[in-house]
Image 1 (cartoon, rainbow, N blue to C red):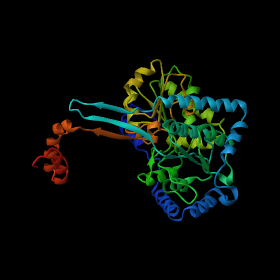
Image 2 (cartoon, one colour; image 1 turned 60 degrees about the horizontal axis):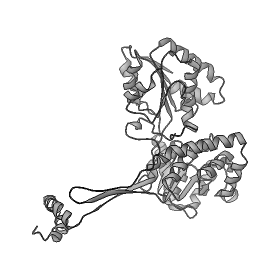
Image 3 (cartoon, helix red, strand yellow; image 1 turned 90 degrees about the vertical axis):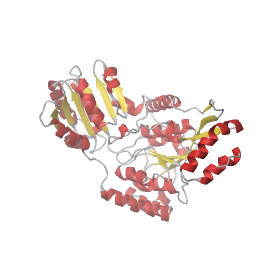
Length: 431
């Protein structure tokens, strides 16, 4: 764990190293993914079967390629009542939040008499990747599936790795609740390839969303353009900006809530109280020993964790903006004031009683968020990721006469005479 202070003479250089730390895929991953994608594109189902046997340890022809939707419904009905209520609460809140994101069509007529506007339509088919290796993530399925259905996607395809052919019942239950139309026992880069190009069994989709490991993220990057993607998501991140009035155990738990995801996770505390910084570091150490995920969380904290002591909490904000983190918590008396200063983050959690973990499950906003400083230019997953906008315009003769001459002049200036002629003929101009 790195300990920094803005009062240190070498702070600028040390913080720059923290910002620039590379925690994402290597050249080896890029090469291996290219090979997998090419194999699935060229060989289809045969490649999927071979890669599933190699990486997940089962034969799709034996265990089954597709999970029947009836099995998903049965898994939902068989859930422990308390867990089913929790899953339904999450789905209800996620749906309500995303329904307010649905864009509206627009149309107007301007002063020149031109009718202009835009029409939104959902993509025909979307693929959702749900991680299924180290852990099962029904929350991720809901966060991806529900915005797609709110957008109006008719065919929603879920792919998930199934080690030894097994799939968590909770994931199947979430697939039922989220409205999945197909569920396939396929994961890894090979699943992304199948969604992008299609195979004999699996029809291609238009958009692929959902997080995954380095191979999945790299596969999405490489297929972009063949299909749309939500983002290239890297290792998780959390930044907590906290004053000394907090319970150090609370803040330590918040930092570890992300560190337990993966050894490459980055957890960073900014505080204006050096004693509090020490207390949080001690609390992290104490809590690590109680976690079933200790090995992963400890490696992440010791390798990528940091505590930064600032003179004031306001002073921390420009540094948070440089990190452009996936998640940022403001645990202080006036969180809104700090949030008002912030420019770059995937999602913000305001106040001492708003731990990031609430956002991962039941709050409503999406937990699929930009990582690796991409919050400088990207947003979290939303309804618009499953839609596309078509602009339109309509001119009558009078409107064309107002805009046509300028169009002809510009087309001729660009050396495009056919452009000019298509307008000039309608206006009976000598162009």
